[in-house]
Length: 569
Image (cartoon, rainbow, N blue to C red; front, side, top):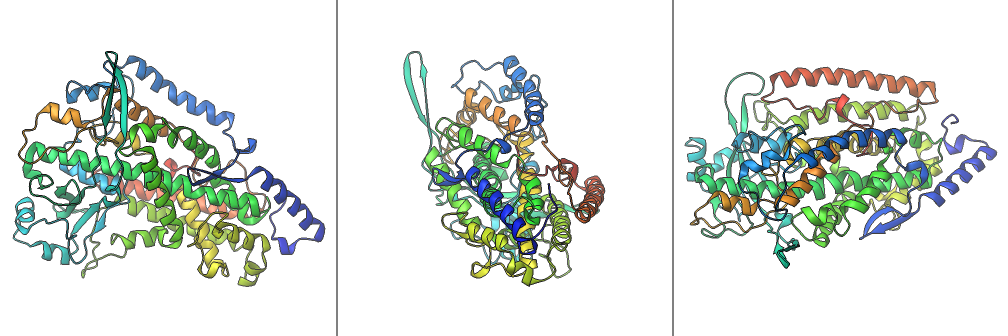
């Protein structure tokens, strides 16, 4: 590897070498689509999983295979006989974190701020949605207060998750042979609204917890067929939570995970290969954070978004419907790229670091994802700025960098990345703008993917906590609820086993580590910047460890030592 340099600083011979290298990369990294989703045409040999990666992955999967052989899955498309049968799916694997606590309302609510999908919860501002007619009486009974909803909203203590984007999904189907007869069944779609309140209690740094108040399973309210349930509604409340968890799981897998980590990175990997020479400083910075990303996305094409793949089998909608949700999520992100930078994304939902009351206290005091993610975001931003400042001292160098400008054009082009919200007026003119882009890309590659990937086993491998589809319609308010009612809603045995298989596979090991690339930088100045970044990560590790001692429950998914350097699993 040669010293990094900007193209305008090279000799004509060096520029010719750069151009030849870029031409060769363009041959290898060609653009293509699968179901309208941008993916590389053919995976280059250099992007394939390493032998070390494959050995580590397969070593981790041995326990899954052994567990499958030891489990007792009999009538594969029938419901389990009792809820406890789901606990028997782990004869050899570790017991998921929520197996014994998933019925607890506080555990249900905490998943919105420290579970696999901490990306949906929003603070209620002004009023509740018109199609979610929670009453003061409901709120007051659950919270044991005389305070009205309007007063709680004004104080910033009400929060909502609204899964309205799932309302138009076409329900998926599954079929199987039973006693020589073809059985066809349809899954159930739900698009819940869920209301939460911050409940102050106790002492210390985190003086309270998030409490669920009400669930409406679908968007159009109806006092009989789609009523509002509260924790006072017994088994109906338990079922309402199942549908809410199912919706969150679908939102997680299609949007927060696949669309907004894996697939939004693909255009950046391809643009970097197509427009930047291998020794361009930006390419040198980003490449370690792209390790195995194309390879894992190729597996997603083959095993997730293909007919008979995991999305087809497990998610609530048809494969076509799920892909439509994925594509819409990618487009929204790309059209508003800068608005999805972590600080802005949190502020948009009203739960950012700066969302505080008149006393200066945060409206949502305990939000582990936000607090740990912001530590990492800030550290990455300093790292990126320090690194890029080695090569760019003025905006003129940015504008004169032909490779960088081509990179931006490729990213925003309809024939390229379609990242229309990347830069204003389609031009990159400042170092700060480049720092912001690179910070966001590296954050998504490492911490953001870690936050939505590694909690999956703890929360989604135990199916009653978060099934990826439901298999019976919600009972109305007058129905009697039995255990059989609940079991018919949850996935049948084979699909429950397939969900467990997916969650174990996605969490089985850590392919690399944030801030520790496999290859050292050639530029000794960049080496020093990287070492400073590593020191900051160690300080953050200690800070999160101390925070976890004070939290209601530890949140370990964003400990720097648990965050990979790239989206690679």
